[in-house]
Length: 311
Image (cartoon, rainbow, N blue to C red; front, top):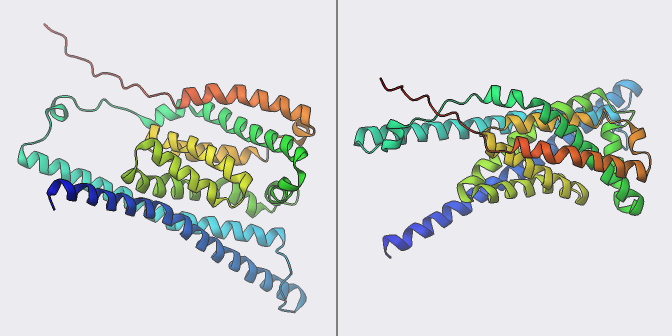
């Protein structure tokens, strides 16, 4: 077999392996979620034994027990996927440095790298100036999602009943403080490390940027485990993915993720108490989402290096 035939086959195998590695973290996440659930179950047994002198666990977990489940689950996410993402970044940095050093030693370093270095870019300043837009976008996305669910839940009550129970357990009046910490802070960190960190990095090895973004977004939707969250999870995952590509970091998407999740506790119920109000909120939110996305996803402009003045 010729070299020309071998190279496409090798690339195809590497691409397939990269996609498998991109999907593997989702299976690990499900396994870690099971561990967290059993940990919460045993905590429930322990609390029941301390309180009543018996070792019989309750039929259902209390809000406090569920809070422990979420807390343990996302702490495990941060530990495992944070370590994995750190390894990928370290490996990528070493490979890039090795390539540059080999080009320097062989004298094959492209002239464009020698004569036209990348202009300076301060990502902290760049995204710090866009923080108000991230805040507005996050609040508007949560408002739009809640409005859509309110409108459709009236038309299809059976379809949305299970989802509304899930939301009530996380943001209802009896929500435990551990659940709030997990949902607002730990879940965004863990999920961004998982999907925009590990999964996107592997998917990018096999696919073009846009395809890799869609691939990790579909995984993000599937991970949420129900049809309703699959659709809006996939859409939001695409937005997070483009922020990842545009910034070269998971931080902007992580900040937006925190804002979206925390906004669920801030939106007054009176804004969405009926279909007309929900429709109005959806229009207002859409009017905010569109310009925010255009601003945040616009291609950043590097300042050209100042040329030396001719004397």
